[in-house]
Image (cartoon, rainbow, N blue to C red):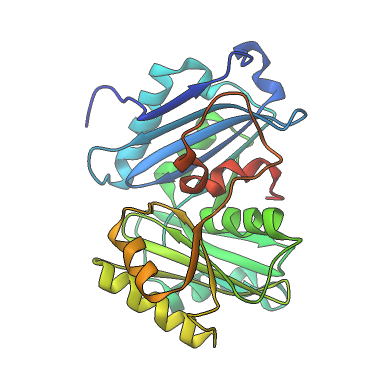
Length: 290
């Protein structure tokens, strides 16, 4: 474990004031390959800070509390009290249950049916009333305990809950039956599909090669009875036009694009263009009802 940590992306607006954090909203996302967070001024709908850390190697869950301490050593204001703090846990260990059918005392059965048992984790449910589902997922105990130590009133959610809310906020007026949303991570990706303005499909696929990547994508398109000639892919996360995965998509699917940034958020500094699609969910979290 390194004794220090350095962000590979770091922006801090000149209007950011450490003494005013109680007026700000902070959103974070974490997986075993990296950690990122953003600070917003909710009244001005303005992004004040964006920090992203790539780990030198895939971490164990037990390493994460020390990561938070290292960030705190570098940026003391990181653990200050904020008006609202939302934490998005990114992992593939989740499943969905329609809210009318959800029985909270059976959440372990729902998750056990779809996901392998995760030691030193607790089972949590996000209620997504906008789409009428419960997101049942594994949350690592060391992570939950650490973030609650820093922010006792923190709102912990699964990353896919933020993804759903973010897409609905940005596309609520122009969702169409041919849109498919792909959020790419280091070892897997989420596919999200809405039908008649309702969440119809969300699944996660692990991949080791670009051939795996396109196989699962094309299989999903076929399963959803969509047409590779007319489907519109909205791509986000860890994907670039120069990637092999993107090249494979371009070869098989006619219409695809990197997802556009949320135009309602004000940026007073120049974020690299790729940040908007790589961190779409994080940068839209402050407008989500989570």
